[in-house]
Length: 404
Length: 105
Image (spheres, rainbow over the protein chains, first blue to last red):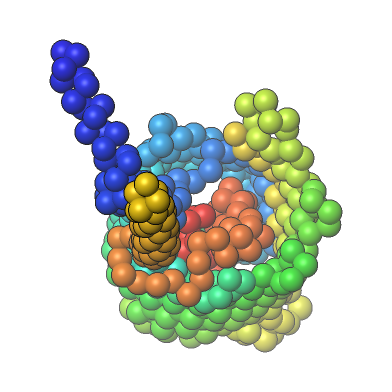
């Protein structure tokens, strides 16, 4: 730049710096700029965030009704840049033993189910979009599904709206019958709203509609009907379900933060479907922290349902109705779960790639009481007068989580 | 001579007064600017993309961001638990909270 021009610029600048009106003008410009920067920074801080980077390794176990189901589950999640996060989950169920349904009509068995899923989340301003693809494979059952979701913050980020859609396809086979192959498809529509009520309370509302079409039976389950010619006084025949089902569920949740770093939560859910099943679920939990390292949770869950229209424990004759079921999951029953979780958290040093890790144990004891599903394994009772079935199950999860 | 000195004195007093007035005006304008800046900052931070004023400000959401307030703080365990119940119950869907709401979903 020429010296003359440089001098002129300096002179003008000095003139502006020394003039009260010039100072004010520059101050205005600086303040506007600072406010814009401050606003943008603060806006970014308020906006939705990607899920935290973490890996989980879990051993899970279900023991109940003569069944043992256990196996590992591995979850990996990692951000890519500031706007995407990818995840992968590997899950195995090793199933052995025999439930009352199997003991009544078939032999104990062993099988394995492997589930794989991959997902990606995208963050754009205050919108979080997620996609997930899941496959499940057994020797007699194949399933795949896609899940799409979008989450958006509104009203000063006090409200979050979540929309979700899933589509799944099942292929149902039958062990010992190679010619048996049926299909079913499923679509889920989800709507969720979470709302900050106070600085210590948040509530959520979730709605979900599920529509199924195709073969919805369990090919191994049977209904029983009276037959005087049989030694037991009854016989079994294949169940027949409707080939469509549409259900609606709505749940309301609330979490409240107590003054001493503890919280309570509650959940109430109602459900009904086109098969006539109506159900409700209530859940209460209390989470307490000890020092900075321990988190202990106590919870109780109560579930109750009324039977499907076409459910009967004992039909009076073969093929009495077009649709017939004796799945205990279709009967009238209730269950009560009592459970606890214990988590121990330890922090890594600031220089470490890993931020923190947790070791967790979750345990729930569930008692099932059936109101019209009878225990046919009791043979010294009159047909149709056997005691109602009941059993208890233990659900255990032990897992290590690491955050980075 | 005296009259010249007195004129100079009067001029210097006047110039001091003018400087003082200018400084007062400048400080008042600065105060006004500070107030304006604070209001602008408040406006931007309280809802830069909307005019909505949240009744729980972002800096008041520490409790809500605590993991013990999350319905899904352990997704692997929660997913398995839902599966375990869903396989044994007729009901399905609408599990857990939608998450989020405090910039911590």
